[in-house]
Length: 293
Ligand code: ADP
Ligand code: MG
Image (cartoon, rainbow, N blue to C red):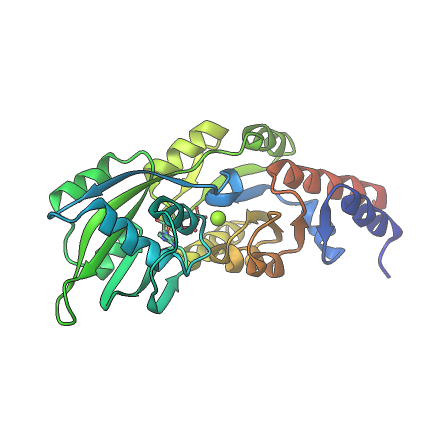
């Protein structure tokens, strides 16, 4: 039988916008000592905006944006929304669209094979980055999206532009992370984004440990590694790319407004998109367990 205190605990949680899918999650939450935080959409708002375009080889900014927007029009990623917005108006049609979670997107736009994604993804997809683009990637203090396409059906994919996409840290993230620390949880920032951007966000919110450049399997592997080291791990995430890691964590917490896959993989769903609610969830479960013991 479920102890009454747990039922009371889950009831209190619901009042505060913390939805617990299984009461056993509350028991687990008491013992967590590490909290792994996804960056984009979790620590940051995930409300991104294109703030710069760098092109190579005589490509126009407009062409680069339109091609990227055609691909991103089929994606639900926060980056995708920003690119579509920056291109203005309705995106062109895309065929053979594929969403490579945590890496980028591919498809055929106007008869040409095309891609948009992280520098690592671009390296897999295309020929070497032209110097102008490589420099833009190295100097970037924003998230970069490399855009490329093939001249015709037999030609290789070539990187032709870099979009600089900025995202703001949520205003309550730093305070919430301080609360999580005070509850005895060591925060770790886990992201598919590049190390320099991850560092900047980590510094802004008071996180020392950063694991960057991870695809969804890499995120899962990081959770498994921490657990194998004897930690009890909470993970907070919002994306399809976080689902496997959320399911593998001792306590998976999905941000409000996140992807359905993240919600289904989690033990706790926050109604609000706020890390403060994640700290509430941990504190509430500790209290509930102390009533039982
Ligand atoms: P996070 O782990 O911080 O939530 P994601 O795993 O969602 O970030 O994305 C990791 C990286 O993959 C992004 O920083 C971006 O470079 C690339 N990426 C993912 N999806 C897209 C997309 N739809 N368009 C362009 N780039 C993408
Ligand atoms: Mg995310």
